[in-house]
Length: 129
Image (tube, rainbow, N blue to C red; front, side, top):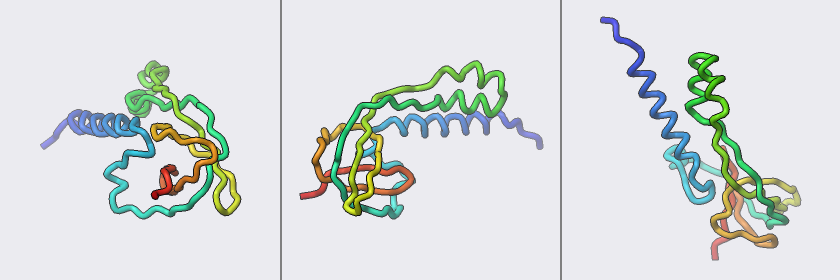
């Protein structure tokens, strides 16, 4: 029996859209279901500087429309989401300098020692204690 693909496509759009919304949460305090049980490498460092940056992420719906039919995706392309974030320049204990962009909802300051959790996305948290 032939079943139209539209319900499957609609379900995929809902899942991808909800995934996009989950990605809007502050990066250093929220884990996704995919993070549970995943091993991360951990390092330590000191924040050298912090500066505000604009984080832009394309609208998931525009990406889906673009994949389905180029014209509709092109028309929806301006629908990008922007938000504010901070770029943290961090000197790792090894001496390497890295940049991490995330929300500063924990009010980090230059000179503060932090834990670096490396994975699909690198995150910083306070050193416990």
